[in-house]
Length: 116
Length: 109
Picture: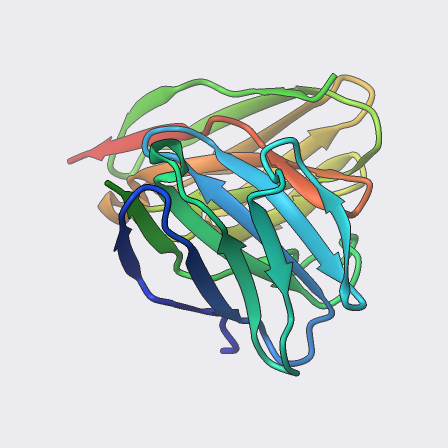
């Protein structure tokens, strides 16, 4: 079964450092997303991406965050200067088209980011 | 508003039936998803409802009433492996999912 792949599975970084989280969405999917989940809290939407541009972003997705699809397979989330409160599990997701089909979004297994 | 409410925790016995409710107060509704999430893992898709009524898929069923802003997930013949969090998520304008806080279900022998 096709899956969304995320690397690394766990990253520890010092406050103020830049991190790049990587994702390989399912190959025929067109819509890509980043979500995050702070420990013990709900999954929160960060950003959606389609046709090489951001289609929507949340209040969390401020100027410290950026996304990129550098080639035909990877989708990255960059945090420019990490803060302690950025510590969370970051999930990449992709979907074949606009939702309304029954398969929904496929989530990757996540990257646990710990900022120290 | 974009509120989604579901109970925080539920417990049930192996072999039993459990119903997890979700209410939402939203505009821009395009459907409702249920996901299962084991601790430390990614959410996995369980069901999707866009029309009123019941969708059945094996041991799991999901119901939606758009007029009442209400959905439930029904789990039958509970197994120990069903112990997980169950996330209600609303599809907002096809651009993103708005998640509830999740219901942590514990199944006891």
